[in-house]
Length: 504
Image (tube, rainbow, N blue to C red; front, side, top):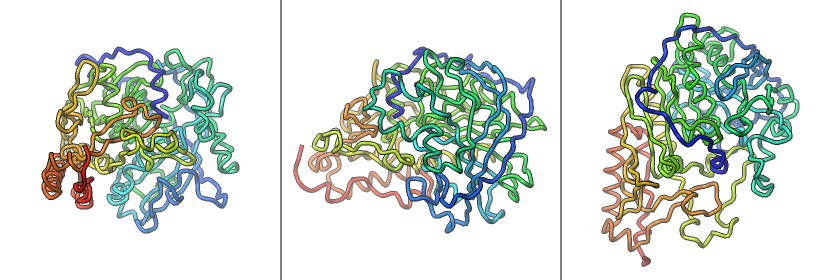
């Protein structure tokens, strides 16, 4: 659905020259108010977005030695416009979903926070990194940023046809949550006024109190309140890991200088690192930016773009920032990874498959690519953690090559040149495409697998292909884009059977 709202793009220029890469001292810093937190009374069913519920967010928490609890989070937070103007304070009540090790000795001292996405209240970064998080002893807190549905829902364009948004209207806003479990989610509420809050020429679809709520949540967690949701754990670090459309609220947070404004009582940072992914900032209106104006001096900012977003940047000639160690900035373009996979969808979200749009026989549309983006997301999170903990800089990656109006593709493989070279792109068995190229009518991106003849022409045999794939995997591990633990389970994309038979 994110691709649908690309039409909302406001300003197409971008100012990311070196002069914009400055950081501000925490002058006029202030401690945010401490929010109130209470457990959500049990209702007899698992919470929305629960890791214990069958679906894309599921993992066996018990086997990993983890527990999950849901809390109401409430307080007073400023209502802020997309341009950064604070209009007034207003009350709010939301919910947080906490996953934590049962044994305090297993906790590594770091909490990951992320706002759930609009569609189906899914934890996008949790889906991508949950195995890594539990393996490494992180705590995780997902939280809701949503609204009661206004007459014109700002999550959709006024010009959207009912048939195009029909599958989404029932899985957004508080109405969706209350339909799921009324008693549990009836208290939730944020301030929202479509006349006061705009993003570009459109109503701002993001909760005006998003920034203040994020700061208050970080303050609560990092204060180690003995009665707080992480009681018994010693929290030393809080990282943002926010993927998909709601990552925009954290870009706003940084761009407007909130990192410098809101601090701990001793002046240290509330947030120790920021990672965002799969979101072309500005695509839902307002300013197009790829790096915040007020970069933090004391925290990394990491952005991860899949093939969908990186090609969007190329087509729209949006310049990209250079990677720097001061401030700590990394921007990763990762060909061969899609914007959305069936493994990523939220509760109640049903996206059409090729057969549903009459494309089951179209070779450019009938094969989704769902290569394991989890492994690179986890490796980069691990690298960001090391940058914070011991000062080891994350790897710097070349950018994907561009023509005047698109990405440059290799004449032999058909795939993008440059960027992070994961094994299935360095030793490919398919051409990786995006929906804007194929026009398949899908939310998912697709690939065109090589024929057996093409595979044999490129590699000679499966054994040679596998050797190149394994070499590329080893290189990705050495560069920090795959963790050794994950490399051990990563198999080739093509099989021996794919090398047999004929075909162009």
